[in-house]
Image: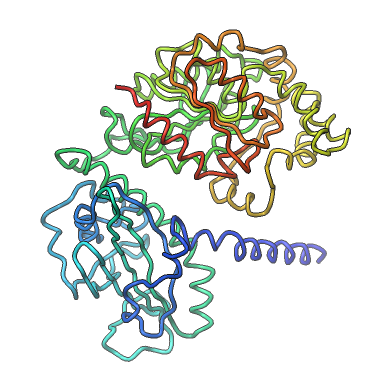
Length: 532
């Protein structure tokens, strides 16, 4: 019986976090305030409807090149450009424009496929304005069965419009805004569905749709001939053909040398290897960088002995093995060279990799890291003291980075010092991390203890930074206590021709606190230094 109040409190807290922090972000993904609150076509399709949320993306192609992709949507047509195993019977959505699916007219019905239910009518084409607006209308009972809009509404139903608005932008670009109107009966059922159920479902499917549309349309616009549909070979890996097309390795372990690395590959374009921090963290702590997947093939992986990588003892976590693992993964995936991004400890591995395998690194991005372990082992404790933390907390920081603790003390210590990692830690930051995938993270204290006692003890490559000839971007949060701006300046000064960028209002994890700024900085840098 004593468990009931705890469950109630937990449920109330979860509901408050969803309503106040998570839902507002889901219903306005990528959209501006004006796109959320301003006028939107299609209100007449649902006369007593309320405006739904909005999602938006900017596409580097004019509206006339975006429109054909919209009019070929549908289960028995070009698909829905989302998670095909959920709405398209597992058949890949179209990756090119199909002339045979361009004759769409008002009154036509677009179909979808649902697991366990099979194909069914989804939407009726209600209004069309070529190259500007496509409005779809849906009406169903509470069991999901399609109703005839010409008949009187029953006592229980869900009704809504799904609109695709194209706004022409300068430079032959398009702003694609998706929104609509919704209503239903009974009112309390409709409010429950539209507030609690639909937002996460719509976000999961529609965010994916926008990313895929942006990727495919921009790729088609860049090439003289549109890409043809392709079927992935057997197995999880879609092998690269140059840099064109989507590559996917579903999260799982791949045998590399004497270990099994946990790997996740997603995206399109030039390959970008992402090395997580810690040690003791894993690839799921870097998921905010998935926003780069429309431009780059992102290769996430867990270092040996970290996260879900298995098969090697922690004592094997040497610089030689860590860097050889990364290069073995490159060879396994079939890339000749790749850009490398390392965060914190991952940045130190990236530095070692760039020094040991210089011919394999096309560009280097160093995110809140250092070339000398004195910063975390000695300086970090002094910084937290200067920022008003107690001497006891400062001592915990010192022990944390020198490995002077037991596995049982891992979580209690982090609970005490964790807030120091952020510019301003809040439930909003936590919600963003969880939404990005941090809930899947599997921390392991043993790698951090080993690194503090052995791997990072006396480690430095400061005197070798001048050997790095890959174009390098150094990024750091203004309020990082582990690797503060002085550390970033030291790093950038030592690497010839490097670019330094300090992210304001961010601590040790600017990719979580200021995701848009970090993603833009990475995109701009890698684009400006693309290998020829």
